[in-house]
Length: 297
Image 1: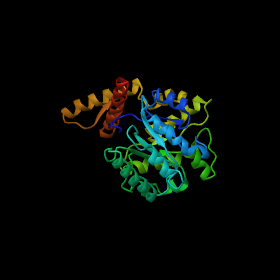
Image 2: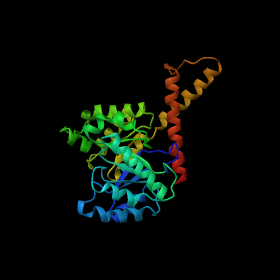
Image 3: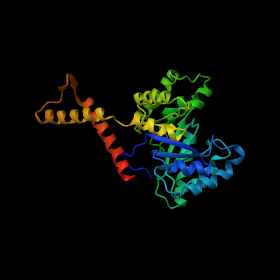
Image 4: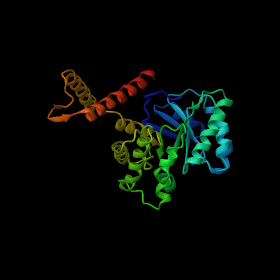
């Protein structure tokens, strides 16, 4: 189960039925690995892939371990959950979520499976992917369903297909969806969301631009489809040395000002008040969590 302040900068996909790629993914330093039973597995192989994923749950790993099951309205979802919810699993990625009812149903089923396997209530994280017009339109209701959901993910591939939108290199067309997902997540009181994958493996510059755009919209991390995407994604979602130094100076200066009875100061010619302080504190909390993770490794 994920602990508080654990970084979620990178979620690396690996096909659940590909033993070598699963083992390789689990050996890497992604913050989380997603063993995929959905798009990466051919329909005829989906039932057999469950056993391979269940076996992987006991393998040594560097990261949190999630499984992307098939969508709730498919014939495979129930069997996927029954097969993989057991000790060793950190969470479920649920694709194509469009309604609060579907999400609440999966949440209920997870609670029964946790009980069957003597897992603590709520031990299994649940991350819905918003990747259709219906999911985006119903996001307020989905996040008001009273489930265990602590963060959502955005899937641009299926989303742009669903709305017949061209997915360009600049991703300007994704701005509305990204802004809505981060804003509704904040209004629901859950953590910052996870951004969509970048599909052009040859375009590392495009990946970094996409990640920085997502960071600017308020996302906390990005899903990855290849191990070589982990390092650039971590670079973007890890505060730089300059950002850390600036945050430390803001926190120290504000503490000194507060001790003198002031709540608004100037630092390096810039006005500093409580929102700036809170942002600086957030940077320091984030880097502390990242450093703690690196020490555990």
